[in-house]
Image 1 (tube, rainbow, N blue to C red):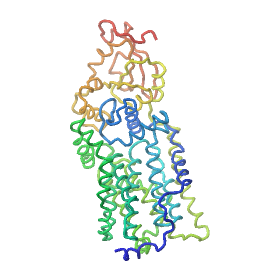
Image 2: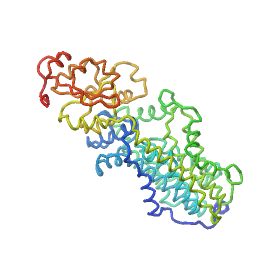
Image 3: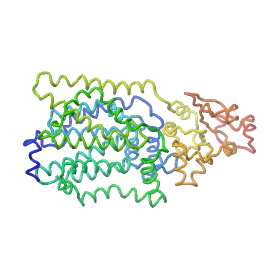
Image 4: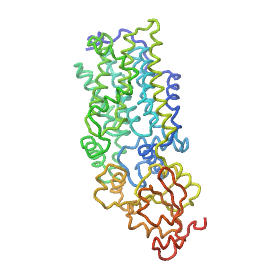
Length: 535
């Protein structure tokens, strides 16, 4: 096996190091973080996930993620742990909120660079790193505070480490233990980042690659009981703890949020089968001309590169097919395929323009610069034209609300409000929760109703029916109410309340139940408890 494999790998490798240079690593991190502070959290995703992490920090419970105080098990906890730790150490600001995706992108970029330098050459590695960092989808994903880039980084690291182990085995007859155990650990972090795809995608990619090359012996060499112990030691404690603390967790997390979400059409973001192929093509447009060599069969079987190129094909192909099959699609899901695609294009360019050819290096920068400009432009445009945010209302609440005065949300849940307004207690949300269609829609209502199933007693204080609102408002001297303009008309008492702020069709009222007019509108009886009525 070893003698046969040597024919397909370079006789001398350009670099025996698997770790990137410190200067390259720092430059890549600085580039990825350059605009991470420049725009507010986008709703719903960024507000939701950073908000859950902030709740974890406020409650001191680092085991159970919560959404408005209710157990939230859509995703595992790694993103929340990283973000909560970042908010604690660095403070509550935008850059700290986006540390998890930044780390995911940086890990993916550095892993790809180190792998390409080890099994291609320095020039291919630097070209791959440059085009990956400039690719608009990858650059934007690195600054978007959700789980997609974090799991993409874990998947990339897993594939790179296991592929390095496989290639080393075929060359030297042994798998480096550090790479092997590191691959199992990276897979564990991938599972903790977003669930089963953290192990399913790397396993399928490596398996298809090796079996397609009839390297069953190499595949068996990657099976490690020590690695399995490392994986279990990292993954099992949290899942066991949640299963013991919250009956029904395993079925909800694995069956509903994994298998049903993958196979069912009852979720949002329905897109056609070709969506990800078109998205990758559009975001990689400046470099698509580089792909011309890949159209020739001889390029894929070239001596010294055939094995590596086969890996990239398996990596890109399986990931694209895996995420294209479900009807529900979001742009960030396809991020694990981007490193493979960009290394493939860099390899194609460098093989067509050998080192030393006049001006060959200078011809790479126009496409890369164009991709970087597009990425910067999109992020900059969003920063200058922010989508809906609760920042302005949150500032008013921080300035005028006294501790203990309740805040009420009417038929809406702005995920960023508790974080931005520093509301330590869960915020009651008023809606028609008893209606069957509430659970049928894939939106914030369904998330809260699902979470309420794990803490029904706690949910009684958080999920409030409209008929209960007046009586609850009457208990306190001062309440704060947030609602959109299109639902405010359903609550006539708001016409007698004081408007403190109105931003982007979202309004904040101060409801002073010491006012005779408001008490009459609410049909209050007796005297409310003390508050800030005189403020």
